[in-house]
Image (cartoon, rainbow, N blue to C red; front, side):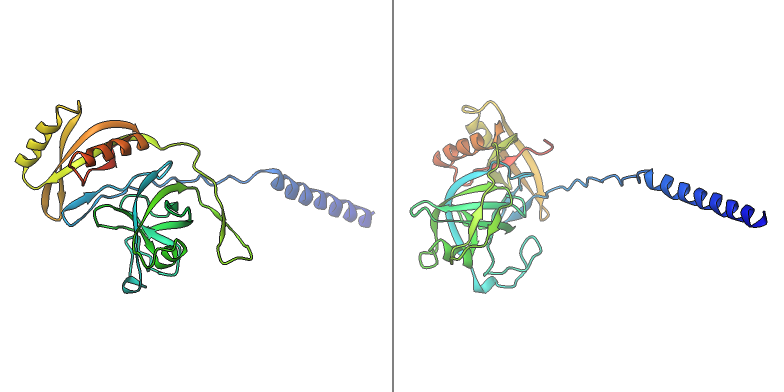
Length: 258
């Protein structure tokens, strides 16, 4: 009887242990809540010109001249903090967010490459993107130095191995044009009187013309901005018209606080 009693106690204990184990297994663990970290893209100034990086590259399209930079900058620190590698497929742009992938198409030949933005520049009038040496070589522009191109923001592309010297990319185009709130900065001045004169000149063409002060490197710049746009491409088209009217430094910015 003692043996039977012991067996019963052992059996009951085993059942209790199993019940506890399986009961615990059926209770789903609490998932850790994902924390969203909001980052602010800070403006920066180069050669008395201030630039305001876009909060998103979605739908970005632009045409202009591309240039390239090489050995003299190799392994030096880029604006993103990465060391510059002239043999990597990267590029510099004045306002696109770091990490953006763009398709760069040479307009006279149709050749194109995919590059990742990891630096700022080029700070030369008329140029819209500065390519790495390798990217420039792929486009056949090493000798000429510059080429007319179209750049289009794309979602991260997938490199497909292929028995060819030319890498093949499977593109996933951005589905729609970037929407938001945009303005066009026509000029920036150290003297407010100059900004006021430009504002008076532009009032005849635009309902919305403002002067926005901004401190940079210990100095205050008075920035003259026009227009309120909901579509980035529409804003770029208007900026091109303004440049043709004698304001070559006009460029589109995302509206602050939008």
